[in-house]
Length: 324
Image 1: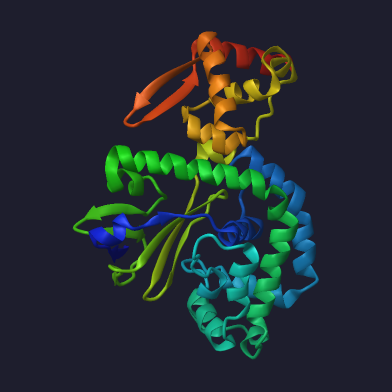
Image 2: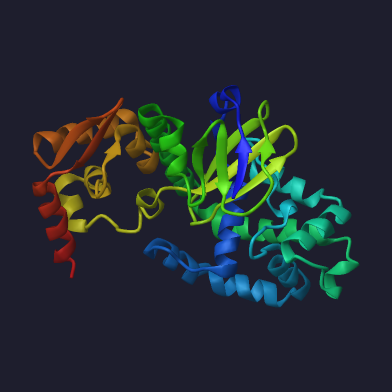
């Protein structure tokens, strides 16, 4: 297994951040290899996979490049530069484009576990081609959804932070992604691969959620290390089920949307992040739903979580069924 040695100060100073490039690369990986893990992803693939395949069919060199970079056990490092946090997509992808050709070749050799194909071996334009493909996926397949995805990712960060405050780092990291867990003794297991341990104490440690079911680690030695992980499943497909029109007419569209989202318990902060509504509006909706006994609330550590009651479940289910 691969693990990092992390002292208490490094762990205490770690941050959850969002990265448009990480979200784009995770989406590219989904387009390249699939499969969809929920109905929302299935619909997204149906909408964007044909154009992606046509784009690569017209550029066989880039098609070979991305196949080579997505190794069975390792991703070519230059495709996933370590995020800094608070960067635009353009700032992040510029670091892919500025990779030295020799470094790109070396990273591809690691992902391939051997020499590069002849079609790639003597090319100096691989970083530019990779950046252009990432920019294509961002513009065509991610940017149109970025506002919604960002709210989902922010909601995941809220949930992880609450989990951290309730159960400590062991609870937060053990549930991050398969292969990641807190081993004790200042050791963070980051994957299941047999790689030498790394001493990262004193560096910046970042955790980056993405909406596709993807994850990887990256580093900018010796200053910065990152763990990219898939956001929790209950949030990833949070908009897949539309609000039934009849339920919206009964409760109002925004309030009905809150009720529909509570398939699983969520906090006020999560609901604000996912819906894009203000804190006051969400609070008013929850009060009405509580008074109508359609939702209940319970405390979990420092967080207050809301979920549907049996009556709320019957109402949502009945309205969904009435559409059929």
